[in-house]
Image 1 (cartoon, one colour):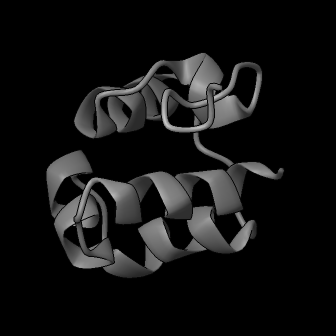
Image 2 (cartoon, one colour):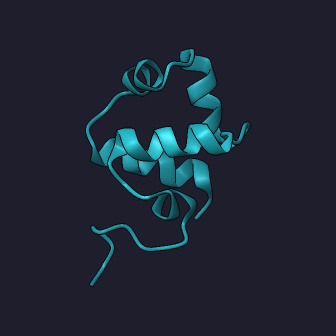
Image 3 (cartoon, rainbow, N blue to C red):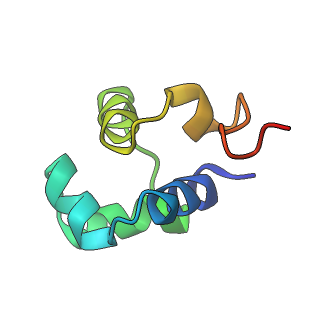
Amino acid sequence: MEFGKRLRETRILRKKTQQEMADLIGVALQSYQRYEQGEREPSLSMLITLADVLEVSTDELLGRTARSDEKS
């Protein structure tokens, strides 16, 4: 699964809107939307911030491990 889709699904699981995410990570709504749409990739520091806000690991956001709700 691509990063943007995983980011979107994780955000929805955490019951946050795109606007809430943008506010929490300190970017404009359109910038955040570009992450989810796959039009832009976050910097390393932004990836860490996204993971912290969503309370997941960076590996989970990058698809290197299964999310806790995907584990069997």
